[in-house]
Image (cartoon, rainbow, N blue to C red; front, top):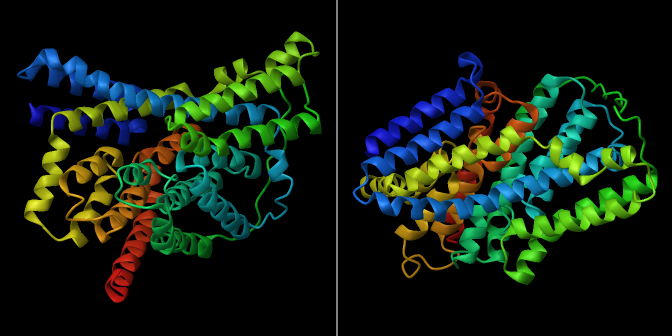
Length: 427
């Protein structure tokens, strides 16, 4: 059974990777892969009646991620509909490609630590559409945004779902993870950033503002109020989680609900047609549903690998055969570029006892870095990458050719820095 499920997963992965060659949308391949993995598990399991319960447990967790993605994308679409991003783009005066690359990457790096890498990627990719007209340049910037978002999320307890898991589980503490992983994460970004910036020359062509199909133009007051309310809603998500203990998607839905009411009030006296074009309902119609379904398919497929014990066996096999944490943990990070980092970290948390590896020990810090940044190596290795892939229609092979080696170089440099500093300073 495990061999069959693994083969189905690999076949689906190949179809996703060569989407343009086989001319099958990646969302269709991902959904089919996820369903077939669970179907094989149900058919060949010794206890098929227990499978629906297992699936339901996974779906409850996946639903939170999908609702979060939908809520964040709707907020961003609503800001965009009101030309809210002009608040930022009007202040970025430079057209020099190299300067703009540094500005975008550092904004992404620090914003990701405050929000999270997924939300930050959605916001920054939307921003790039307002700043860069040439598609090839915009794709390269988007690839760097994925690297910067994942690097920024790794050193913050709320920046990436895996660091949050380790924080909640008691394996790391907030201040320590910031102090220990800030420099490795920064190096993870700086190495590819320096390589790309050295190749980059010339001036950027700003896109001309397209005429809205509706013909309706928002006022400065409307732009500012929706932009600040939308950004505030996203920034409030970790605060909401800290106050209530509820999962992040509840905070996003709370913010969306508040923003919905605000837009209803500011457009209350307008004609129905104009009001409709600037409403949350229209924003919901514009979000990229195929990308959400692709994300669902990938997560469902990985959940099948977790439920069947394939991921656990893989992690245990690495531990038994290798034994050296300086090899196992970086290898886990590399695996997170192929398989979602959440079940990999969950498996690691179950394998290593906290009594043997106490909070803030080398293992947990290094695992937080590697699992957070390793996903940048492939476009489907992180939530930020999947979101960017859907929004900009980036192909798996393009990312593999243009970004993967840059991400790998940054990942390796940050890991080497962390290992050497831990060795010399005995931390």
